[in-house]
Image (cartoon, rainbow, N blue to C red; front, side, top):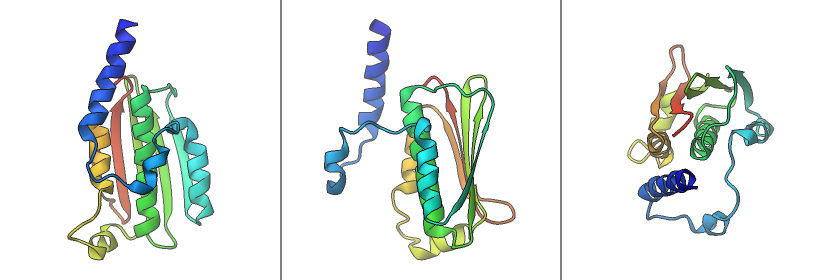
Length: 166
């Protein structure tokens, strides 16, 4: 009981530490809904495919459930990256999601073969929004590492490594 309590309190402190003051009023009633995790990834990918974006999923290694916070953070990272692909990659783009389960970590990669950073920066170079900042915050919150940028040969990539036990 003591260990579970400490873990819950530690995750709560992390979450409270990164909350923003500019809350979205449209989301106000949704805070009580269960948070999605990697178990909901199939539904997310189906929804993205309905928009016309071709998305493939690869899972490598022995899949193990990460800690609850990492589970939500990894799902939200994939969701944000695919949303960015939809917004910026162009109509003929394709995307790939890869999950690599290592001995003590989970690596999440989301890549596309779209237009890369050219349109992303051109649309509003002064204020790219909270998406990329939110990605860095989510990954850092659980002691992970994040790399974001253009891919060799075109497109854009997001790669995050999370410890399975945050």
